[in-house]
Amino acid sequence: MVTGYLRTGEEIYEESFRIIRAETNLARFPADVSRAVVRMVHAAGATDIADDVAFTPNVVAAANAALRAGAPILCDSSMVATGIIVSRLPADNEVVCHIKDPALAEVAAAKGITKTMAAVDLWLPRLEGAVVAVGNAPTALFRLLELVGETGVKPAAVIGIPVGFVGAAESKEALAANPYGLDYLVVRGRRGGSAVTVAAVNAIASTDELTNTSRQG
Amino acid sequence: MVTGYLRTGEEIYEESFRIIRAETNLARFPADVSRAVVRMVHAAGATDIADDVAFTPNVVAAANAALRAGAPILCDSSMVATGIIVSRLPADNEVVCHIKDPALAEVAAAKGITKTMAAVDLWLPRLEGAVVAVGNAPTALFRLLELVGETGVKPAAVIGIPVGFVGAAESKEALAANPYGLDYLVVRGRRGGSAVTVAAVNAIASTDELTNTSRQG
Image (cartoon, rainbow over all chains, first blue to last red; front, side, top):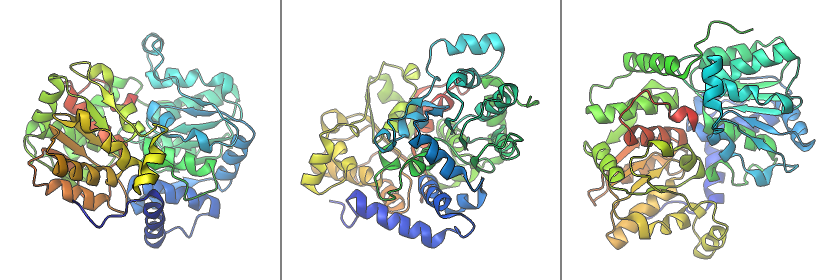
């Protein structure tokens, strides 16, 4: 018998957030962004990820308002889509991910682009006013910026936190420097990923910090 | 138009793995474990996660042999289950996750344990010789060790990489110190999570490093 560990979700969450708030430098964040950053630190298991967060001050308010107005969440990967807690969404919002569409490989090969980019192209009819959640592929962010530039269609907010060694840092810098006035939340550099992205989205969707969320992804 | 970024999955993978192998200290790993660690670094976006990896030398061989023999993969979270690329599994293996079972909340409340722990209890009929993949909840690892101790039923290998601030480090130390002879792969400390766990499982399932895997989760 292993003994002495906290066993209920609530106890574990409360203690986790206490530790994170004690160890993380959150002073530069507005209150609503700070709540999302606490969740992101929790998902990363690393307090210093907070130091790499870049954002527009209105990003959480804009994304939350869009969700309340019924906006869909457009995701680049199945792990992101799966991790979003549908029961927390305020307007029975649609969670969209095209990456497992069997037709994508052909479209991607024909266009000479990644499946992720082809899947982003399929967002276009739902993109205006949507919440975008990119947690995996830098090419999804690059493609999104191309799409916005070419069409003028704009999402309400972009949670853009792809991970990796090729293009991830550059794609997040491109989002942060976007000339379209897009509200964004990113983690600069190589780090990020589906779990961190999901944590941000779930924090933005609800105002109850202790609701069991990313743990259940 | 954003220009100058690599666009095909293959190019991106090849360059990513080149960078990872150049920047990561992999000398202490056997070849098959090293392949899994490269994938884990890729999913974390952090080369220094390799320094926190602890393992039994036989863990990859044992897990791969179990999968070839038809063993199921028992997952603690939906994000882990979703990220596993079913098409890479060698024997049409079952991917099991009970966390979204609506009955779990009641079972957990009645026993005074987390839903994650209750879900682990449901693994028991399939646990012997299985591959366990814990990427989220420390309590899943603690419960697994209790279950093995109480029943003598043993999985073939445990990929145990929960993330977090309460119990995560301790649960992975407990697995690494297990007295049951379990083969294991862990990331010591707070870091880990579903993406890193999925990367390890997908690496173990296949021998083709460049096959598109965790990116598609």
